[in-house]
Image 1 (cartoon, rainbow, N blue to C red):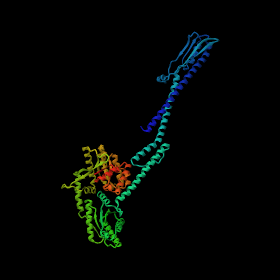
Image 2: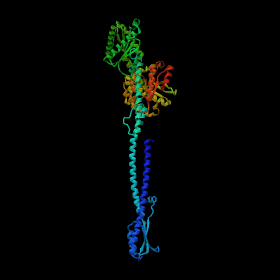
Image 3: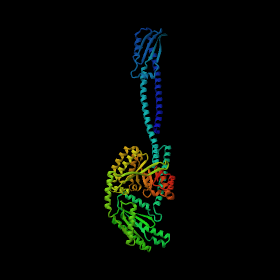
Image 4: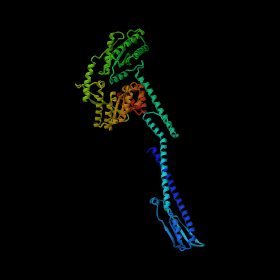
Length: 634
């Protein structure tokens, strides 16, 4: 029972007792008063009637006697008037036993009243001639008492009801602050660190409110500090220490993001050819300065380019890369000319006519990352043949034909559901040592039975808007298998941004999960960190939608480069799965370990579980266990 109900019940009971006692005393006092008044009235009537009859008592048969008594009796207030002579013989006896019909019998039985009787001696001269007895009819007293009790009861109930109403309002006002504090505490537990601006007027509750505001503010500040540290460490983990450019791991993540999209992009592979000769001529400090100059030249040139979106990377040593997005081939060649010119100017400053060469290829969703880098390296080798600081742009002549063939194959597989769903990467909990979840993975074959590259398969389905149907079929397959196999652990489901934005898909998913509500909590929707970063609002709405259905959400491949830690709080996922690069060799990398510790600390405040992916090294596995994350796959 809530505090409001307890207080309302207790105080109402006290009010009821007070009103009941007061009402009972009031009725009792009225009854005593009426009984006293009846005795006085009877005595007054007997005395006055005795004096009036005294002159006529000389003759007991005088008709005036009965006439006078009858006149008094007819007033109706008397139950009996009896006149007796000195020998106790009744001379006149008048009775009226009529009871008022307005007074219920239970009231008479509940409140009995003594019948008032008075007498008066009648003298004729100096001799006693008779005695007059007067008995008051209690019906009139009962009627008066009943009327007073009834009106008093109604007034008391009205006062009681009004008092309860006032009490109800006062308790509502007083306890409203406690409800706000309760909601604030629940929000803090859920990771929403708000404060109460309107202070309650009750001193004790106001003090508690201030304490809760202070607590919420301190936790919020802690999380902001953790986010700041995570951003700093994340940048260090993904930026080259010498040049400040992004590492190769960031380049690979960005390419994975392109696989899920439908934009045109170009990859520039830049190699500093003169580094080999410079090593023989200069010391390491000079070489580092030269590499920094090359990095600045690349970065400045790409940032000043007016078309598309550019990102610069350093792979290792003298190997750099640029990713140019959302441009056509003419713009891609224009950037190549700017880079070539910039390197020529840098060569003049360093008395080196030939510094670097650039190999350029268009992004090809039909190839994996290694294949595209190999193609870029071939283009680089062609650029070396062209001349100093030259570039070579390799085009995909057969790409349109290949895509058409892929489209036909993908559509046939999706329409006929001839793909298989397998389950990989089981994640075991560190505490329970039991499987927490496993990933659903699509496998498809071509007409000859050869396995298809799933990245390319999904990319083509995304490009030609077939991905929604593919995701629906995969989810239905997972639900059916969990139902028939009685799976008790969770299974993760990866879906695309196009699917998430599809309203028809949400309607379909709502119906499917409602029909299988018992397994909703074991369905975990896997969302890529880099996809979320592109459209946080849409994903935030989708996560809330999934939570309303009772299912769960995991952000996969999380690192500070793909998604800012600040975004975790409004998104409210159930799980965060760290990227492989973050967890790889964590035992030997203090910055990676510090990053994971900060993620775990922040996530524990937000009630989010942290997971690791594909941890092969036993020492790394133990380090992650000691940090306190929930689980990892091997």
